[in-house]
Length: 155
Image (cartoon, rainbow, N blue to C red; front, side, top):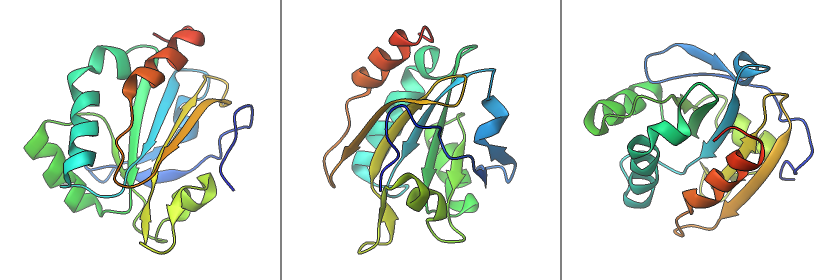
């Protein structure tokens, strides 16, 4: 079951592309979080979506907001992709146990073994204020995330 608007976002800790552990609770009381699950690094639609975040860092990564991108890829794969694309926001590895965090958020595709395109905007109190899920291969619209951030005063 997918995490719903109004629910407390399940906490987790995953390693980023540098091997540093990052927990959702690290941002509690400090920043809103745009939590973006994506299927796989080095793929066209995912790259386009992550480049949108990179290119609008003033919106998606600032004093009020952090964006956390999660896939089942390994930290070394994330590191290489981040270096190639200039991604400075955390790319988190849900590699092992495979897809555990995506499952907790209800966006793991059991048949394909990857995270579906799920997005959750979480306020500073840890409450989910926006969610969407797009089927493969449909891309998401980051404009809707901006709207959700504006509604909570984080944009």
